[in-house]
Length: 348
Ligand code: ATP
Image (cartoon, rainbow, N blue to C red; front, top):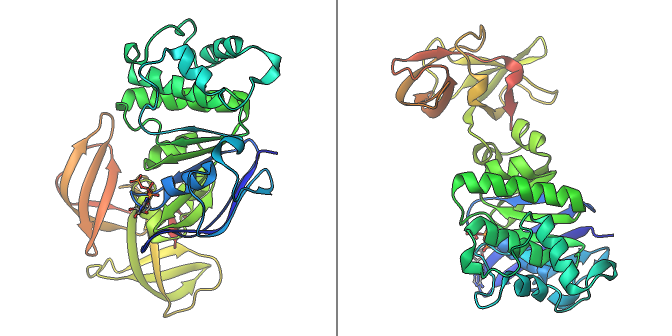
C-alpha cells in the first residue's frame, strides 16, 4: 500500500509557523496536488513526507506506518525538486543510476537495463551518454524524474518541477508527467503555485492557505463549488459579492447586494435550506456565467479595461464597489449590462 497521510501535522521553524495543522490523505495511485500562494506551506509538507524534516507535532504515515524517525532513503519515496538537481559532472546514465544508490533495481534487471527502461519511459532513449548541460531544461527535468523513479518508489514527490520552464514547455512536460504517472500508477504528491496546472493534472487537490488545507476535492468540485472566499478567488477567476438575505421565494433567496446602485440592489440565488432573512452572505459568480443574454439578475458594469484574447475578450470593471471580470466575445469599453442564472452563483 503506497498511500500517504498527514494527521494534524504542525511545523514550526523557531518562531515561524510553516504549517498550522494539516490533515490530508492521499490514496494509493492518486495524483494529489498541493496548490497555494508562496509561503502557504507546500514545500514544507513535501519535505516532511520525504523525511528531510520532522513534524513539530502530528503524524506522517506512509503505507499505513508512522514515518517518524525513518530516514529519507528508507521511506520508499522519490523526489524531484524545482531546479534541475542533476549532477553536472556525471552523464545522464550515471545520474539515473545514482537513484539506485540505496536499493537494487526492481524486477531483477541490472542497473544499466533499468536506466534504459527509464530512458524509454521518459521518452529520451539513447541519451545515456550525454552530459546534463547538453540537454534542454525540459529534458533535464525528465532525467530528474527518471532518477527519482529508478528504484520504483511507492510515492513520488514533485516540488514545482516545471517552474523553471517556459509556458509551452511546461504544458508539454505536465502532460508527459501525467501520462507517466498514469502508466506506473505511482502515488504522487505534486506541489505547485499554479492553479491552472493543479486543475489540469490532479485527481484531487488541496488548496492551501496560511499553513492549512482550506479545501480538498476534485478539480471540478474545487472550481465549481469553492467553500471559502480564498478558494473562490485563488482557483480560476471569480467575482465575489456580499449582501443580506431579504426573503426566500420559490426556493430562491432574494439578496440585497452591498453597495449595489439603485434599481440593481436585488439578486436571486439558488440556495439550500438554512438561510433566514437578515443573514449576511457572500457569493461568487464565474466570469463565464455572466452573460449579456441572461434575463435575470441583471446589472451594469462600468468597464475600465479590456483584453482581446483571440475569439473572446476579458473585461475588467466595477459594480457594487467590487472589481468585476467578464468574459465576452468582444473587448467592449462602454458599460455592459450582464446577468446570471440563479443556479450559477455559488454561496460561500
Ligand atoms: P513557495 O511557493 O514560495 O515555495 P511554500 O508554500 O512552499 O512557498 P514553504 O516553503 O513551505 O512555503 O514555507 C512556509 C513558511 O515557512 C514560509 O513562511 C517560510 O518562510 C517558512 N519557512 C520555510 N522553511 C523555513 C526554514 N527553514 N526556516 C524558517 N522558516 C521557514
